[in-house]
Length: 328
Image (cartoon, rainbow, N blue to C red; front, top):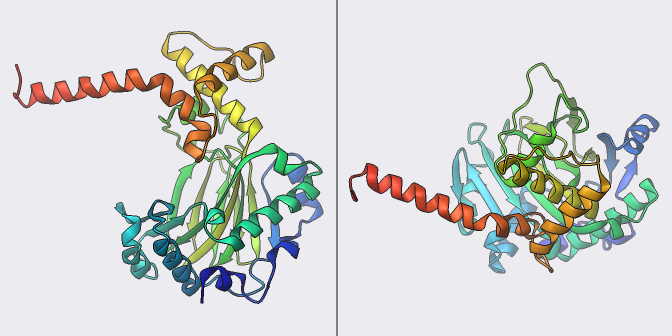
């Protein structure tokens, strides 16, 4: 059976299903305040999101030679996508610390495209604005991980919704608008690719205990860490790369560059004129037709900093050669 049929389960057309099925009044208030919130979803109704179904899906990705869409590790060892079977075999061991990420599934498997499109319609109804128009690109990512596996504290650029499909996990989410949790300089480093973000001592987030059929919303840049339950976990992340947050990313990148030149920049949101100038500067160097998350968010910054990075690499090579007494 083809994975697109397997994932569809008993439903012939996901596009006609309400995916978000329940948001309590309390959670709705958090939703409207742009905070994290929990919801229920219908994707587990078919019972088709099993580990065996995931194996079928991975088989289809391998058949299409979509090796770059498969990212996996066992402990600290990263496994090439073509060798994902090694990670699959280790998944059910409680001591394996195995993690598999299948990216951009909506571009490969038609049923995931239907799910992503329908989910945007659900969000447009809930938030009362056109999510499709607000989104540059949607990323449908399937996460499969071993029992007790921990995803360390980090932040993501996308406006994200995590749907638990199989197994259990606890998502610890922190408020990105709290300066005690996240500072402007933290975001500048994150968007410059030099983040050293760590959970602040004494700051506790909200713990969302997810079972199949439940989901949680991660606001843009909300710090979080995740721990699985006692069985293999399968979850679907529907991340939306927004025009607004991508604009903010470019301003953070510009501020990072200004600090490198010894200038203390005006913070995001304090001056519309300065924000617009910073955005236009980074946008001038950015890809006109981005095809990946990296090109959407980082292409302009990488082009600007390429000469400095190249010189730094040459400097490090020269230091190593001198230290090794290869040159004098």
